[in-house]
Image 1 (cartoon, one colour):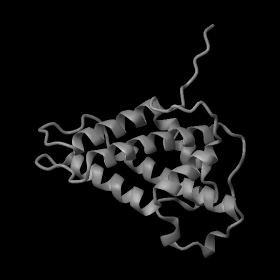
Image 2 (tube, one colour; image 1 turned 45 degrees about the vertical axis):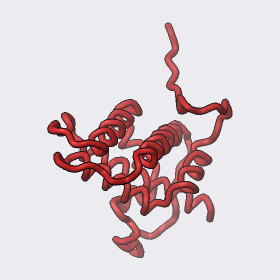
Image 3 (cartoon, rainbow, N blue to C red; image 1 turned 30 degrees about the vertical axis):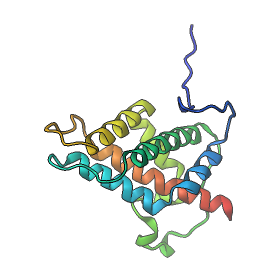
Image 4 (cartoon, rainbow, N blue to C red; image 1 turned 120 degrees about the vertical axis):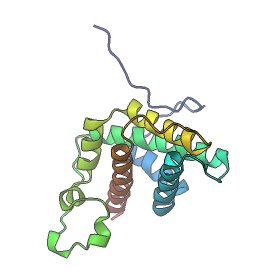
Length: 173
């Protein structure tokens, strides 16, 4: 029986080092602010569904964002393979809705649930296809709309950004 392995490295990477998922997420958030990432992802989504307009940002910035999201998605998948629990002893009655963001109280308690749920519903390749399609459609004017459901992957990515930031914040404490 042939073993299949998922390649987690970017095709443009010249370095053959192995990193932990936490290191990959830390690197992502060193170069991309949480709020800026959510805003850019939102603008890519908005321009992808508009038919007669395209995103005005430099295409190289959008391409770099797609590449960094691709490595972020792989880091999220690697986190689901780990056996560690990322729970915290926070009381649910003290949690503000503004702090939760899109996360439910259960997901706030255990951010790993966000990643498990996302990768149960979609594979890494489907997230890559989603990001590539949204970037492609946002960079030009097309008559075609995306042929798949684009709301669910978008919500999963937004929740994964929140959960990863929460994991790194708790790890720092």
